[in-house]
Amino acid sequence: MLTSLSGPAVYYLPFLDSSLCAVLGAILGSIPVAYIATFGPLSGNRTMVFTRYVMGWWPAKIIVILNLIVLLGYCIIDAVVAGQILSAVSPNGMLSVIVGIVIVALITWAVSTFGYSTFHYYERYAWLPQLIVLCVLAGVAGPKFDLYGNPSEGLSERTIVGNRLSFFSLCFSSAITYSGTGADFFVYYPVRTPRWKVFSVTLAGLVISFAPMFVLGIGLTSGLASHADWSAAYNTSQGALVVEAFRPLGGFGSFLSVVLALGLIANMIAPTYAGGIDFQVLGRLFEKIPRIIWNTVGVIIYAVCAIAGREHLAAIFTNFLALMGYWVSIWIAIVLEEHLIFRRWRKLGWNWAAWDDRSNLPVGVAALVAFLIGWAGAILCMAQVWYIGPLARLVGEYGGDVGPRHGLVQLLDQC
Image (cartoon, rainbow, N blue to C red):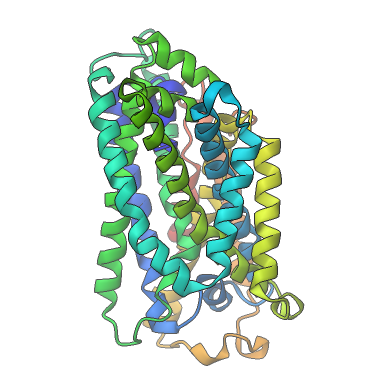
């Protein structure tokens, strides 16, 4: 939901345009995640361990570091929003955003530290109260959604197209960045589990999670122009906007806001758990340090960063997500080439037992060069606040972010 707030508020897109871009981005971005997930039962390896077979022993470490940035970055965003909601709910803001961030970080650490079984049990039931709360939010805030307003009025057609591309890229990146952990939660499945089943349930789960929430977030910011109370709350923080939307319910609305804030913990547990394992994949020395230590390090890092960046969430979100989408798209293209051309077509196969044997893994020179070439294309096509590439600049006043798709297509075209 947080991603889609940018549709009307940042990119000046009307409700329909924002919804179409967001849902399409969610669907297309979820397909690579579902594809990567199929390697979980097949290999028995975590996603970043599997990356060693694709990128090589040393280049894979670059991918691991980038994936850690993604995982910790998501936790930063969720921690800030949860802290904002808790602060907005508290009487006269007595509970600061900083304290709220610390609370959710500590709870996340506790659940993720006790291993996969505890995490899986928590996630099995945590979605239900969230679903109820979000349905109530849609019901109470829905009448204030501006379904027919046009915030892009006055902008040129090319600028509108560029904004559509950029918002689509943001939603696409929001989904595809889950690819870095796609296989992690299927490694305990039987090796004979049909790949189409893993693909289908992963794709369905992601799309069902993303699409309605994107539309709900778009609805909230679509009403900013016509409702001064919502606009004032949004200017305070994204979390305050959610609390304001619940305001007609009085004290019950405050309770639902707290439930929603604590529900963000469920979104933080998976990245925290996976991040602890990814730290160990960095090398043999890192491998010897217990996961509980790495989980603790990860929580400290994102809690400190969340506290430091709590006043700049929108800027962090729009720049961070799109930037992370670039490398994931390039990496996905390399995985496709490795799997379909070298392993399947040339019948080289996979030796899954060699996951920790450097001598039986690729050197990775070709993969590294391909990765850098993909980045060169992405730089030409990216559109960020701090940089607009020469190709992206051709689309409208603010540019159109086509970096993630270009990086992927450019690499596939090399085949």
